[in-house]
Image (tube, rainbow, N blue to C red; front, side):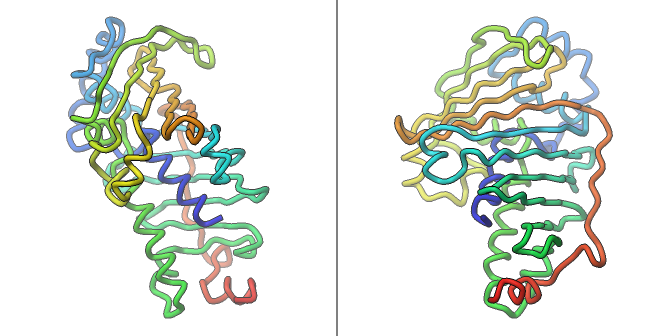
Length: 280
């Protein structure tokens, strides 16, 4: 379950939603110009800048994510839907409340004040475990949660369209506008991008072995972008035929208030208490 929860956060990073890249705040001042650009159509040269500016201006978003494909079935990710409210109004300190259904159990995650908290249902007695606190424990399991927290921090560090696409700079083998489509009643332009995973850089791949990137093959990312240059849907397909993982993300409620609060007091459980409850 812990592994799948980590995979969910990594997928969130790849989805292109999160802390705005350096300079995105200044780009947000050009939102009107960005809308005019969208009416004409984005190019490979303008795509990163325009999406980053629009996202920075919006500040918040609600997203859902689902997995499919043979690879998702094999890893247990299929049927593990994810929902998240994300506040990126402060790029230096993003906040997030995320929920995943994993193997019939619900896992809640909160990122607030730079710390991750996980509520893994019965495993944590219905309470939240602070990964920062767990990583400082003398218990050998503390190292596992420290590593897990590091992976999550790296994946969330640059999980915006600009940072992700900048990580693909030099790896993009194809970029084209492939049509228009209505997503949840919103008219969008469709952009299809092909990426050579072995040439990608950045937090989404820095901890992955070269063999894993080679096995991923060409990554196809299909963006649905509205007239305000905000992503409304993203479909990412990676892996060889017969082993592919397809991640479908939907984005809504851009710019609307979100409520993300760190758990406190009796909402928390220590690592030792969690392991004792599990018989560990």
